[in-house]
Length: 342
Ligand code: MG
Image 1 (cartoon, helix red, strand yellow):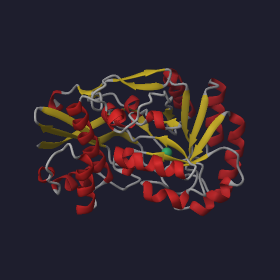
Image 2 (tube, helix red, strand yellow; image 1 turned 180 degrees about the horizontal axis):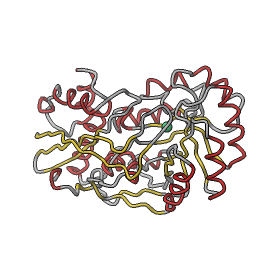
Image 3 (tube, rainbow, N blue to C red; image 1 turned 45 degrees about the vertical axis):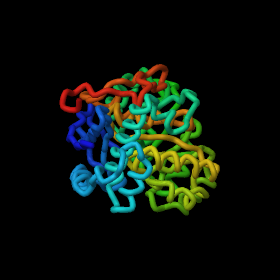
Image 4 (cartoon, rainbow, N blue to C red; image 1 turned 90 degrees about the vertical axis):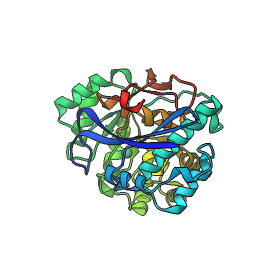
């Protein structure tokens, strides 16, 4: 088995700003390329700030892993569990390995990863388009740019929250989802969420800082819109402890470490009567294609990461009326378009 981790800088079409993070013009990711028995498979690591991971951590973790000590890449559960018990790898690296192994197994069996995971439905789930925090003029441009998406995900958590939503509402009546990215305190959250209810808003994501679970339960008792946990939840182990305080969870492959853990999270969330959403980091079509494999099992999707970049190294996703489809039906279903990854 030959495995390489290649660096790639994803260039953002526009400077991206969210509550509590510095502005960004690019995102560095790692493309994991696995080759064995004439099959080439891929996975992607886009380290998340929520997990406090960087590409440097991903490279350090990668240097500690010897995939060749496992009998076959086809035994993906054994490999992933083996790596997890051996050391505590960055979740973004684990996600890249999980994706590459499932892509490999799918290509070997000539099946999609969706079908390998036992998902037989292809129920469409529409994804939203993210509008980061910006001045009102830029927000107008972004609303225009979101033309192909029927749902907007609006980042709030600044002093201008009401002005931003009011401006967007003067431009479009599309459904809005709000993500406060931990930017509010609890009284402010109640006041803003109750106002947002009158603005055709579907739900609010992570109003309070990640650790404030009790406070979130307090907010939830005072509002009607569903409140979804994002930064408060990373893996399945976090779910039972926050189920009383939220209406749903946002799964991200880069937080949880890949599709196998994501499947487990969906099961635990349903056992706890929680709604389930899939989100993403800024990622290429490769990692988005992995998240898209889970779509039929989910209530909400926010998989627009590949639409925010201008130099996607992979191709194979299409978008119709906000529904992302993976064109290829084998493995993850996308192909590299950069020669270095082929
Ligand atoms: Mg979020």
